Image (cartoon, rainbow, N blue to C red; front, side):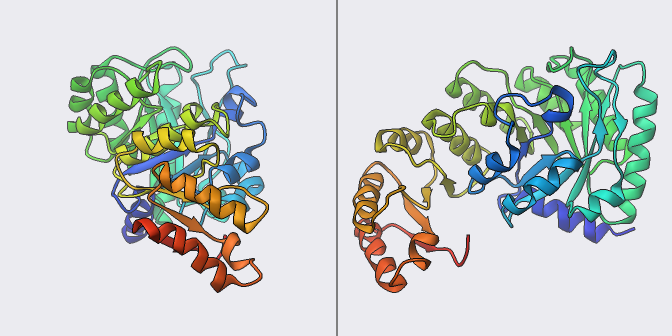
Length: 346
């Protein structure tokens, strides 16, 4: 047994701020190619600069997206399977093994228990076997402890959700995901009775971004250790400033000191993102322009719109004269006493 390995890998998934911010892309097996994940490699590439601490995917998707995963991003391989096409969509079986997840480069493995399902006993037994195998290899287990609810829906029963979360910890989970989406007081009770980090599945159910972020803030204050988001991110337009603002604000809410955004749209869109992000906002790569002069003009507009700085890579090191290009970028950025980050490689 390697507790050191478990702790080390879990710290990676918790990120520098000690919070868990996961991008969940495991929907394809259960629900099919829902809008936004039809081409997972392109999606992960697009979100590469977003400040997620970990990515949660099914085993078969790892090969197709592995080259697009940022080096700083942890990988959780989900071992449970079941589809909405079946007669028992809440019943999950193991579709892979811990050994296979390790061969894929996993930092942790994930399983689901649908508490209250007629096959709950088998899922608990499967989870226990996964915990034993993962612990022997030094891997944390991220256990989705779902309290009774309709397929795809959240639970508002804090008593049932607290029981499910505590049961998951008792089985041996290193981190527990709850599908509870009720009042913060209910979440506070669940977090207090769960001895391991408690992660929200999808977060509060709200129709607007501001309402979602306000509710998320309350749930983090109530004891949540982080959030696992999926549809709220990948079903949005890739150039939508609302989606980018949502991602940036969510990252700040889970504890980021600085946030990098991959938004490359109009300055008005960036202005909205910067206004809604309470920590410094850094632009990933900067505006997409064919010439250096056009890039610098567009960068100047983005700095005026509220960017705190820029992280540049190819624009500098693929230039004909990298030091001169870097200096010209710095002149724009440091003109307002803002940070310039030069990336060694993409």
